[in-house]
Length: 333
Ligand SMILES: NC(=O)c1ccc[n+]([C@@H]2O[C@H](COP(=O)([O-])OP(=O)(O)OC[C@H]3O[C@@H](n4cnc5c(N)ncnc54)[C@H](O)[C@@H]3O)[C@@H](O)[C@H]2O)c1
Image (cartoon, rainbow, N blue to C red; front, side, top):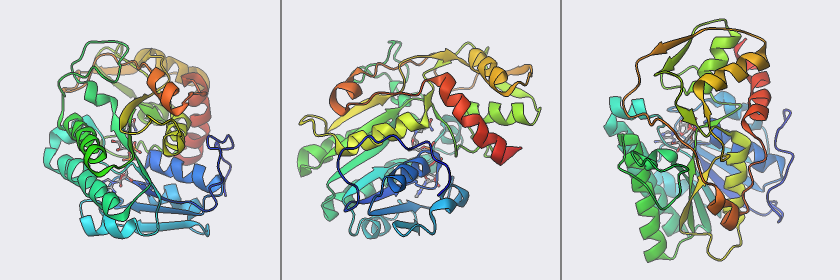
């Protein structure tokens, strides 16, 4: 397998006799989780992805691995979810249509994949007796709440259909835990970045777009004045959170949602400066009108995840950016 950033282990037990289903495993975060599991000797790693927003290229290095399986299929089909769970013990559910602007342009598609698809997954997991499900929620559930740092129990009104879809995930997960005695954990990611995050789709996030702009000497666009801040989270931290959540032995870890971030925020203007420094390139940002549905500032309190999951984000933003640049150079130069 290719060079990896996943040498560090966040689990104690052997993964050899364990079977995992990663939905959205050909996407950005999902393919990083797959890599961790295969590097650490997991018995079976099955990906379910419809390639709506994922890339075969992200899973190409694993296709010949004896423990890896790929199912091209859609979580909006309940039967597909059920079949994908055959022989599986642990589920990391990453499949969804991300992006606030995408959800404003097509709320039905976002609801279908993110809300209906999620419900299908929970139902299939219940029917299959899955040991534990960890799923991707989002910092977008904080909506218009002005509180900083964000703490899990104080959310506001959602600002987009995407945020509604993620809120619905949390509500469904809560009721499935309550009524069906299932073990489910939600992770509210805050602006994740790193290798395998593609800049070439219409709803790409800021960091991959900046990376590509810098490496190709193209203009970098910033919506608003660039002073909006985010708790940018290197993908290795998000993978750590998934692994820790799948195996946390804390008796109260399940049926909760956790902020997954670093606990430090940085403005887009500063972020672009760091990137210029790392790449040795200089470009002037082009400022555009603020986008509807975007929040101004975001910063996480990560103490709950530290307490219940043992989560400890080791890679801070600058180091994460430095680890990400080589991947962009290799793939987009
Ligand atoms: N990247 C971030 O900063 C961030 C922040 C908050 C939450 N999240 C959430 O984390 C998860 C992973 O995000 P990502 O950045 O890796 O996104 P991504 O788009 O790279 O990956 C999502 C994957 O899900 C697949 N998918 C979409 N709809 C599907 C369907 N109906 N059936 C099967 N597969 C489907 C896509 O093809 C894609 O491979 C998503 O749930 C996203 O909403 C991401």
